[in-house]
Length: 323
Figure 1 (tube, rainbow, N blue to C red):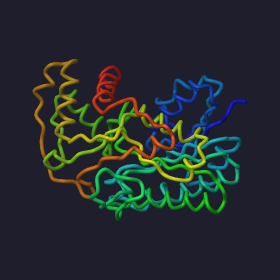
Figure 2 (figure 1 turned 120 degrees about the vertical axis):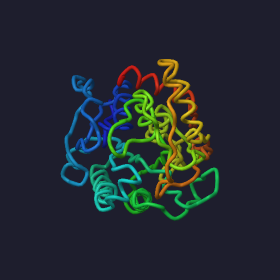
Figure 3 (figure 1 turned 30 degrees about the horizontal axis):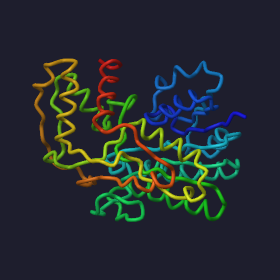
């Protein structure tokens, strides 16, 4: 019997990679997206596949949620408005999408009797906690409206597990990057943005002195975590949250060095592009590093791509698709 997965935000960066992966594994996949930040071209090649269905709708509309989740066995909830700066500029819309939309999806999933609700949580939940590596049960106070919304998601999921018996698993994503991540727009993530700037011989601007560090996580590790979260049969593994990362950290200066190295293999002139340093960004934490022991122990997580390995793959994808 074929299982059906609803992937919300399925036209976005992570969502479209999940759609592609699970179609390849012969699941039926329903994609719910309003194309606010996702792109039709990310999923265009799936339209002819009889196992793929697109539902154009908005998670802020409970009827859209109910329509999309009908008949689904599992929900992989990726739909959200990302970006700390966006949430600082417009906290109301971030809250509407990330909190009210999330609650709509929980209610619709509960009423449709889905087997499990796996959702994109965020490393921003660690807030002002200075302990490294980050372990799931030790968090600080949020440093942005975005971080608040993602923490509220975890609280709601926990209540729905305890009150209604809906199985939930939250995945705290750490700086995910890879193919299909959008380099354009005011809130583009740092890696695709820097790649495009280097390819155009423009100087990337690093916020601060470049010594801030992140646990950059390649998309294929994130796909593995979603699949494990959806399929695990370990009763101790559900109704909790996991760091979703590689478990290593890279400074922004090192990141820029790697990008220059990999891009210069395609175009040697890129090695000479200078980097510019600007002020630190509001709401940014200095360092981020995940402990992935919990996911390894409870779900057998075994990330296949280091930051450097993933970055090389991502650079090649951008060069071949966007140059």
